[in-house]
Amino acid sequence: QLSIGYGSQHRQRGAYFDLVWAPLGDVIYLNRIFTALQLPPLDRRVIDKVLVERFLTTVLEHIGESKQKVLWYASFGDSEASDLPGRLTKPTQPIPVSRVIAPYREYELGEDAVVYDRCLTEFLDCSNDEIYRDLHNGKIPRCWRSQLTSIWPRTAKHHMQFEVSKLLPDVKNMDDLNGDEICVRLTYLGDDLNKHGGDWEELNRKGMPTRMIANGCQVHSYLDPPEISRMQTYSLPYPAIRNAIESGMLILEWEPILREKVTYISVPLPIAELWILRSPSKGDSTKSKL
Image (cartoon, rainbow, N blue to C red; front, side, top):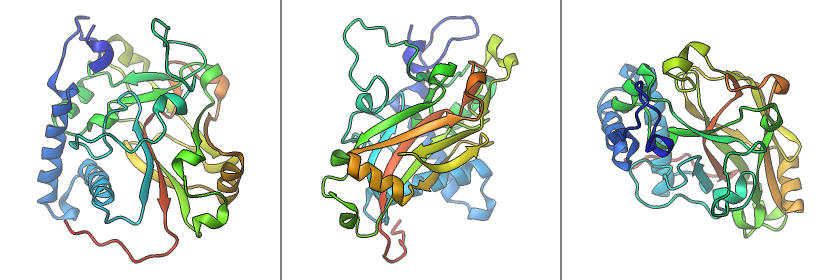
C-alpha cells in the first residue's frame, strides 16, 4: 500500500497517494512562509511565528550567515529531506541514519524492519481531520511528517550514537574546540501532531514527559509535550563533550518518566528531526541579509 511510505490509511481503509506527501508538498509550506513574511511579526499567528523562525534559521545556516555550523542533520523516516524545505540537496549527514539509530547498520534484504529493540518510524495520520487540514494549509513541512516513536517499555529508553571523528574530524581533544559549544537542536512532535484519526482518535494518544542525556550528563530534564511542534536547542554539558571526544562516540539518550507505562497510546516524546551544531563561543551577532 502506498500509505505505508507516504501517509496513512483512508477512512474507508483504502490506500491513497496525496500531493502533500510528495516532495512538492513543501510548495504549500513555502507559500505559507512567504505570505507570513509579508506581515509584521506581531501580526503573525503563533504557528506562523514558529514556521518562520525555523525557516529563517535554516536559511541563514545554508548561506553562511549563522554563527552555528551544522555538523549533522536528519529527518527521521525521510532521510533525504533537507533541513531547508524546498532545497533539493541532500542534508548534512556525514554519518548515515542507519548507523546512528538501532540496530546501527543497514537492514539486509528480506529482513523484517519491525523489531522490538528499536523505535518505530511513524508517519502522520492524515485520517485525522485537523492534521489533514493543516497539511493542505502548509503548516507541516515535509521534515515533520514522520518521526521516531517508542511504543514498548523495552524500547522506551533509546539512544543515538555518533562517531566523533566523523562529526568533528579536526578535533582530537577539548583544546581543539577553542571553547566552542556543541549543541543539539531537535523537533519534538507536540500535541498538535502526535495524534491519530479514525477509530484510533478516541484513544487520545499523549506524549510522556521525557528527558535527554548526553554521555551520562543530563541535557534537559523531563519535558512535557509542547502544545505546538517546534524546534528546540540545547547546549551539551562540557563533561559530556569531553567524554565523547575521549571515547570517540557521542551518545544521546532519551528516557521517559514512566518507562514501564509506555504503550502505543502513551509514548515518549516523538522525535521528528535532529541537528548537531557547533556554535562559536565568540563572534558578532548574525545579521540577516535576506
